[in-house]
Image 1 (cartoon, rainbow, N blue to C red):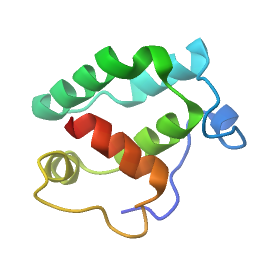
Image 2 (cartoon, rainbow, N blue to C red; image 1 turned 135 degrees about the vertical axis):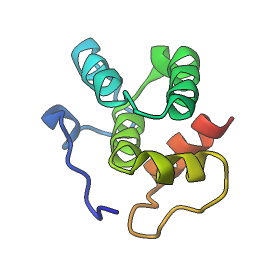
Image 3 (tube, helix red, strand yellow; image 1 turned 135 degrees about the horizontal axis):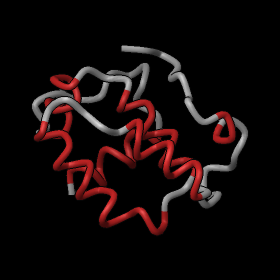
Length: 102
């Protein structure tokens, strides 16, 4: 697992956690969230259908960290078979994971 995520959207690097996500940033995030495992896609689609209208920079950063995981590691987290590794377990990542699991 990566200790520091590679953000495909540079505008998120300095943004406040609660700052609303721009349409462009949201589009980039949705593109990055496409997965090879259908089960992960179902969790992610449900997340976006519930939370897209109130996405923030913090949630986007947390999502990017999770999207750096392999499909199997992500599925294990979503199904609570594994816990977050400390090196990626930031508040933003934990919040996104909680919303994905809900």
